[in-house]
Image (cartoon, rainbow, N blue to C red):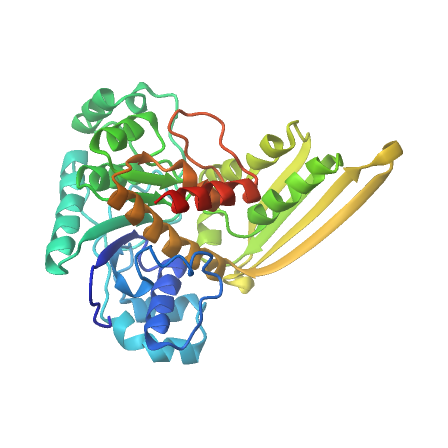
Length: 394
């Protein structure tokens, strides 16, 4: 990776070899070269945040291939662009990952930490973070979860309800504690801000929210709001504003990248559908009985996702209308810049000494965290204003 001068922000990514991570890192290298602009980076003008060029990347992945090879497999980045940054990407190889096949059946790879007690896995991850900080002389380390979607455990388990019980669960290797929670626990106890860009459970469970508040470590998530749900959180407030009743909303997605392959497993898919489907009723203020969300793995599309929506509306005098949207998007191209902005924002929260759930970052997520477990705001324009107000107060 190109030399970084000035304050250095480490970014330890879970799922380092995935399409989103490799796209984000290649984009930073392109910015260093001056060969791309800041399209897609909504906070590029906020110069008080850590410079993009100050970011230093590492992390974990099931596949130990260097990032140049990984990026070539994902085929998100144009060949000429990849050639321009192949050398710095080839210098980064993932650390062995902590996994549990019970929670992500379609994720396979040989670059894994040997199965052992949960406490040993936590210690291994903390050692990785400590070594990364020391070897790279980092001022801050942010951990970002970009791993494959995990199935959810029993969210009502007492193990997840408070920190003391969670600690006992770690001691007893309780199976309700997922890999995502192990990473979150390790990061928070190392003082590293944590971003959960996936639908998997992590620092949003009560026990880990308690830990983040106690340690004054910023945490944010979950499930990045990139394409179809972003559009939904723009249109739904407009329909509500004009008193147009949403009678039904049918959403379907086809994609053929690794994320789509993981979601081909019903247990992982259920986690994703829960976060995608939760926003509409909250914004409109009533239940849309015919709100259907589908995600289908379709290998030929790769990372070029198609998100198609059919919206049935009822207007004045009971007249019915329809709106249809076909968003031909690039999954990782939408997600990667948001990940980069989140890294800068949680690093800023840490600089300000503001730990715990970062509610002002709901702008980026399908299912935003709240510190008290209350109902979050989902409308994009309102979320944006909350974020900008927080930045201006700094």
